[in-house]
Length: 370
Image 1 (cartoon, rainbow, N blue to C red):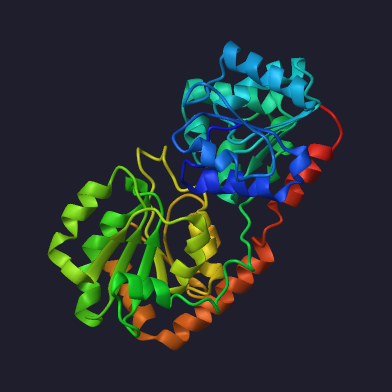
Image 2 (cartoon, rainbow, N blue to C red):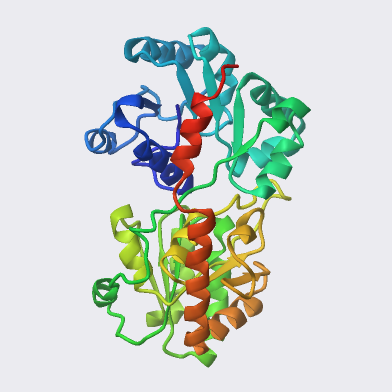
């Protein structure tokens, strides 16, 4: 049960979609919101997708009744909330509808729930009425767990995004994307792929780019994604001409080749709104590392956990364009060292983020009843 499902794009959507893809199709039924392009997605998967009439699911009695009916039609007795807040507030109703096991997945936005008094009480209720609340990073566990009752906090289990190491790998050919974008072979490319929202730090990358060009005049910054900051970014790169390219959202199936077209991945994500909007982890960092790229990540929330600073990439002050530029230049001017960082990053992803999230979820759903 989730609002975060394709065709909507984002890290949470990719995570939830990947979990569903990793489960036996005969055991999955997805209840989600209606959105443009739903029909194409729903016919492409091997399990039923039931769309609510609204574009945003809320924990209302009407939605609870609709989900109850779906559970009865398909014989469902386990419920997973794709994001704990706010749908996890329906846990008691799902229990009354016959759910014997309930798992609530948390991401970054539950951190602000944990810090705001009223939302904190609601989050505590979700923790007490579900069997397990998961977390994607140690940072999220500390922040969210502090808002829960001790028994609920003790039941928390790590469920981080996994990366398909067969899909994201260093030997892929990115020349097709370079040719499509008019980027000559040999020109260094720094990729920033994510939703275009203020937290991701694209504006700092653009501000840093003239400093990068002073040392690496042929370097290209490739910004991939869409979102509310797109128009502002387009205006800010107008003076940089061919040194910065922007590409709208790319299908997931093409992302491995896009990473392969780059030499460095950089996204100086930052915490916003007085600490209420941090980066939880960042699946794009993991995908980039799996492809063999050194990663430059902003010091925000759980994002630094994906990088061993100085070994697989760099953790930077996300509000310092000069520091961001300096680390990128170090990587571009030392391709052998950058390649070694990328190799170590892939090994780290293989050790810690190699796609076993669906196995962990299956185990959580099969444990003893509430």
